[in-house]
Amino acid sequence: MIRLEKFEKTDFNQLISWINSEILLKNWAGDLFRFPLTEESLDWYIEDTNEPGVSDAFVYKAVDTISGEVVGHISLGGMSYKNRSGRISRVFVDSFNHGGKGICQQMIRAVLKIGFAELNLHRVSLGVYDDNISAIKCYEKSGFKIEGIGRDIMWYNEKWRSMIEMGMLENEWRELVGGVDKVDSVDVVDKVNKVG
Image 1: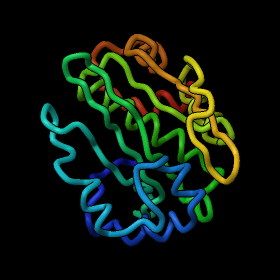
Image 2: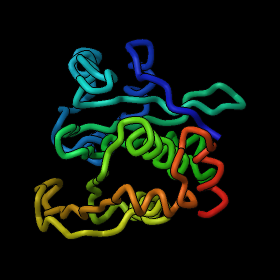
Image 3: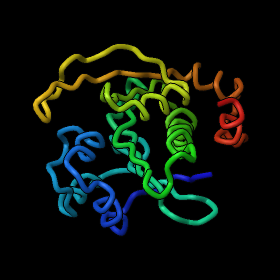
């Protein structure tokens, strides 16, 4: 199992060591950062984050609850409190040391719990490049539905990349976790793991 904790300056070096190639950086963040990832760019990235009702982004590290190791990274941004919507982005699992353990799904489910149960969102979306097959499978297994494709949105390495847009609504999430009305009284991640 994993838990999400606020991503802080003390976590920068680990993330920088994970994102050690330009293609990993593109998959992780699109054109938001330039390669190589730096502490200065990450300072900007976490500025004014993780304050409910105020921040437009929530940035987390994923921690293995047994070993205490940091195993991944995820953010929930693009917040519109008026429209009760947010967007999952910058999902990364340390697959070299922790691949094949379902960590991606656990991270997605944990951030969905924050979005729907704690921040009272109505809609959570995400975008994934069409050649990132493992990520697409993770998001589908986590309950996301494909809503469309942004064709040829990025020119990289002498070819075009398209973006698959996916989304989930609060009623779909509640159905996924068993129709729970009061989600804070239930361990949602455990319940969803049994479903998925």
